[in-house]
Image 1 (spheres, rainbow, N blue to C red):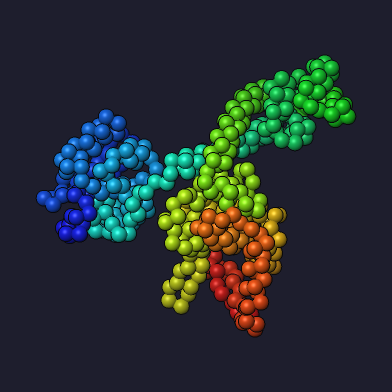
Image 2 (tube, rainbow, N blue to C red; image 1 turned 90 degrees about the vertical axis):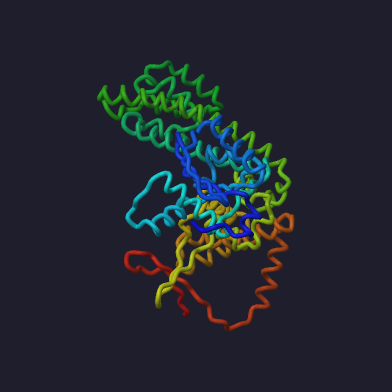
Length: 438
């Protein structure tokens, strides 16, 4: 283990590497006198006693702590101690570091804690110190991410519901355009099979549809289709089991919809109170759903990114260049916060309908042979430079101002410069992007 330099001693009084687990955490502590190892139970009481003991032992001096978490129970427990300075380590970084010194694959919790400690002591300049954003921004970040998970759950249950209905009651999919809607759920809960719907009094169904704001003509057509409907199957085993599953899924979806609605309310209140709301609300096509996500993606720490390229790289929109020998290629970034990349990608796709220059840029990319998603990523890359400047300057976006800037740049561009086009090529089973000058 490398000895601490005087600069390091002045900065931190001790260094800790933690290999976290579900029940117990292995830790390694380095001081000027050597390295110590131990096991820490994953309970608030045990962590409180351990952190307090470290604070008393080193007179409240700053202690650098590295662990393989950027979010998680252990990290959140440690953030409340002012004398602990946290350095999250990416799991891939720790795994590669381990493999570099232990190609045999040998692994244990105490030894991993030692490796994380060594990574902290020797390569701390490559690690980023945990610097949490404001409470309001982090709350918004958690809420929009959790909401998206519930939306994904809604899609998953909707797909299962559709699959069951196709087996025994496909007419319901035609009658209701959105199978997860309230009227579809209420109808299927009352009449989960075609046979039960046909046995019901027409006036009862008419009253039900009227209560759900159905139009008279549409109600008459629906009653006619119910009376003339033909069962998809007569197999009672299929009908009984599938209808039971449909009713259960309907009730689950109702709870999921209520949860999403609750999230929407909280998110909208927080977003409108956020100091950067006006900036992101001015972006074309952002709307009620994406404005909070964009606020959460960029955050409020303007000192975090020195330029737009750092933001583009962190969010995974910027491509990665690679070269070996005479070959060079470009691929999209594999390790990045996927939700942030998805946020900018979705917004860029929507902005095509609201911004003339964005639509033109997208169409130009498509004309060059780019696929839809590659073209949208290229547009998102361009949008992020604009968003970064608006965010840094604390100014809302103005489409007319940017249009004028594009016109001035076009006039200043020298004529006759060669245009480099990019195209995908297959090489050793991988898709690589290469530059071609026509």
